[in-house]
Image 1 (tube, rainbow, N blue to C red):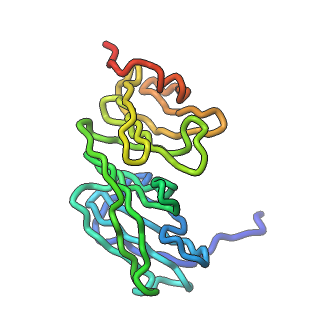
Image 2: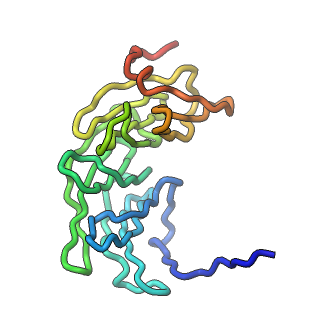
Length: 209
């Protein structure tokens, strides 16, 4: 018998009839609050972005600090150091673009999004990962996987390079492992695959037949 029991402390219904993907929530000090207070950021496939700050047991209307309807489905959210100006930024992945925002407090009750930069895609995005690729310190870069097997790398405001995964069928989960500076995914054959960043960076960008 377990000595511990999980208790429901706080919950909220995010809209009505909205759908969410696996990467559509992140938690952190998105607005750089000096107290270090973390917020909950959610994004739905209907394009609704919300930021919550639970303060006490049970949801209260003032827990919702931002609610914004964007014009594309939200596939994934991420918090990181995505700009050279420092601080923490919010990255929002849509099917045809990746947008990076800074989140600014407006008094104590509301937050505001300020767009820092944006990348548009020719290939429809499936998911993304981020990190200090190549051993980079103090800054995070992006790797976006498309539905046709292309990995696109972005160094903040700059589109760096793109590579196609070999023998690709459908997009699988994608994550970055900083210890080995490599990307891990799962193929349609249910096999784990690992690609070193340096190998991808020096490979050709042509799609194999």
